[in-house]
Length: 376
Image (cartoon, rainbow, N blue to C red; front, side, top):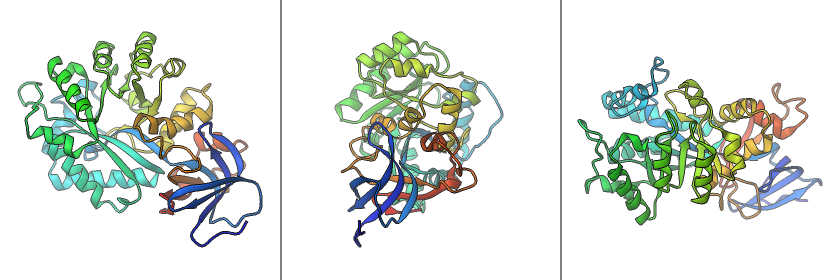
């Protein structure tokens, strides 16, 4: 097969389709889309290796990038309303905050992520700072971001400031991303969830991280997805499945905060769509290779295809972007990562997908492809 001038061709082991079948072949990219996927044959390729979809990081908090590796403390004191994280955010200058978030965005890109979703605190001004960081990053035209904002909380009470000004969040964010229902008056949360749905935006929140007491209320709000769920039950997962609520797990974050592990197998057996996030940059690098490795080695009986799928296609489903990205299929946007199989780390790997999931790092990346162009 002869390569056309307008085409980009990658070859090697292709992780193909929604079933993540590994096959030897090639991918022809044209006009930013995947035009053709073929098997075997002689072909002139631009890049060769193990070809996977770009990662989709379904949950980050990059606003706390200015306060990495704090002392260990209870979760409420660390990230709860009025806690350490929010005090640091209040004390950090705008320029320092933007600069630290810019660094994290560039790190997200450097580790093969093509789309990430950030829960951004600070109301309208917080969203503005995040967008400024994104626009100043060198990779701003090489990856996508979804912003889940939230209204500011009052300084003396936990009541949400759902003012006309704060409602501008809906104009500048892709959705609303809240902390626990236990952190705010129930009526405020109910009104905010209803307003979000009325405006056709996504609504998401944390639940079941500190205890199980906020899970019922979170499900009652019928969000698009719930983050953490370490203390949730089989009954909770069945209710979520009935209401078409997805889940996002953040394994490294749960470990470092001492909150335990989510019952991941029960989530999957219940039929939930489960995405993956790296959570607070304060506690973890936003590196999906690391997150993927932790999941595969902690939940050892979980098939490596499923782990990779959770970090790509399933996370794209959580964010309602799976029609465009998350798997390698004809017609989809060509957002891909090509992993070298000749590095000291990857050489002699017997199972390509297992090798990517359990041991690959940013140092093994041969190329990052975004909308059909090689960008790294």
